[in-house]
Length: 505
Image 1 (cartoon, rainbow, N blue to C red):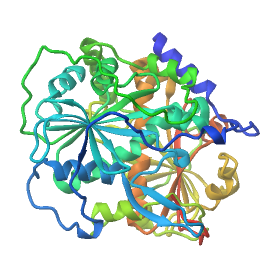
Image 2 (cartoon, one colour):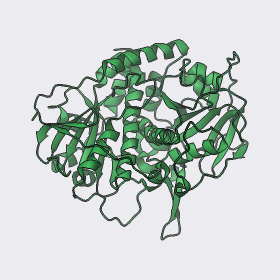
Image 3 (spheres, helix red, strand yellow):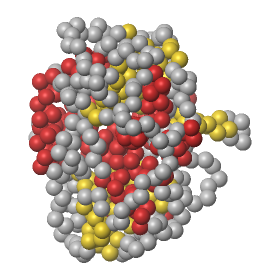
Image 4 (tube, one colour):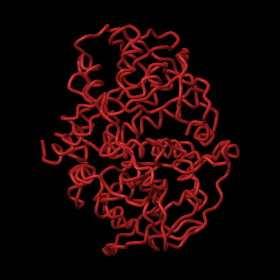
């Protein structure tokens, strides 16, 4: 294993969550602001985004990318979609995508050609007031293309969105473990963005391999407190003219996110160890990722298996606009123990196992395997299942396991009451030995994307969903009979929601 892979494996072990451990003591006076605030940048008002109800069927063919499209994409993937006034008079904003602890540490940037209604430039999306803050004037797509190792998806895209994390804004509550959360939370935003691209007929491609320092310089990020995580190319038909002029460093003034922000040292070290430097490194990593993905994520032969296979039914397409589903989405606070339909379970399974389009998945193979603990689904006996493809459940062990599942997570009540819990597992040593430290980022991001898709599928089916944190060793031990040598990457719960007295965020 390479040194950077070993460093990320060590990080993963150090940030394992264990029963009985005290939670990090938060500093209420130091709570971070949930959005970035520039002090000296030009602000451009974006066109108003139509309500979800105003969206109907999209016109045939690829739509133009213009200022209204640039306003809509970050709004519906990461912005504030609705607000609710609480009894005490405060206003609660609801975001388009879930975030661990509702701490909202992911930021969105745009690198674009000249678009109808918007000059070419590098912009930050200010979600709090729906404006674009211009970091650089001019067309800088060639610099992003070079940083991305000349990825074909970027070569003619008029627009690329870059997601970053200001790590402290999540680490304030979760400490060193927040580096995992950065990719989970970026993934739920990417899931919305890819769903929007599909609905609009807009080509999209997720780029995970890029020269980290070059992208951070382009966006004016320090790469320590805030760093780029993923790039999404959108659209085509706008070839990039090559340039040999690298961007000069910029350092726009940013208001501190809290009185005393600080990046935990383990996060900073993990990010350095998982970074790529130079186009040659990017291209070689992408080749390794292609070979890894072509080989597929081998599914372990279970030591214990009931062996039965169940084919899931076809799923009818939801007639609601994606935007309307995003508005309805929330993180379920409580589940009832009622059964869900097999059609709803099928929709959840397809979402859990789908493979995004991007440089880390060129062969269309998953990076992790998906296991389910089914407790209450019509026509499917309770038990532990492996999801094969997107439509077949393999029974590994029959029987209800509500109490066992509840013991694997801090939020025992939610996990125990859910109709089904979904678990994404990966062979960490295999990933890190083949893909180095960057492989750690990609697997975490892949799981976050799956969680985001699951939120949308569950909401469309009238169900509640929530991501689950978990006790690492206990969860891996629970599944070891059926999936040995694998670690749990992420988990989620789905079911019918129980009445609640406070709104879900």
